[in-house]
Amino acid sequence: MRKLKHASMMPNINTATARVLNACGIETVVPPAAGCCGAVKFHLNDQVGGLDHMRRNIDAWWPWVESGEVEAIVMNASGCGVMVKDYGHVLADDPAYASKAERISALTKDLSELLPDWVAPLRARLRKNSVASDASGAALPVLAYHPPCTLQHGQQLRGGVEQHLSQLGFSIAVAQNESHLCCGSAGTYSVLNPGLSKQLRDRKLGNLSQIAADTIVSANVGCISHLQSGTGVPVKHWIEVLDAALQPQP
Image (cartoon, rainbow, N blue to C red):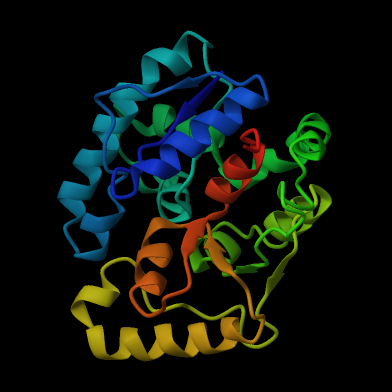
């Protein structure tokens, strides 16, 4: 059983996540009292408000954690994941929440950290659904992957999405140039510094365009929204592409 983190800005990401987890025999639980991870308020230097969000989430998740009914708290937005993994540090001096926060952080995983366990159970199902081609024999979309800063730098998770989606039969690549750089979203940066943010976005899209992909994928809702604002190429969460491939072909 897994706890699924909200991604209300793009609800299809949550729906796709739940379907893929279900296909792997993993039940998702979404406590209704859980909400924003607190990162946005921290970006705006509202640390008091951010800590309030963190405590509220801990209170919402704790009954499931304390009872041992969940094995992990899964984040399908890497920006949220890097924040929740830091709860233990941020709340270390709060006597009422320090130990709980440490436990929450230890249980938190980015969705991509589950991928290694999915390869075997999903490979046969994807092969059955013709992951290499659709019903007409046309190749599935080529994927250009933008690894978010919060995933590759904040959480130090690199290469997993590309490696394991490739093992499942997908054609996926990162930009040959500057794949380590920010796309310009960076939490509230795109709102507070729109000029520089758009320059970074366009630079990132220029590098990704060299892949000549049909779809751009990423792992953070902020990156996805920001990149989509500058291109006509569909930008999706990688879990949405995996979910679509798992659905029976017409």
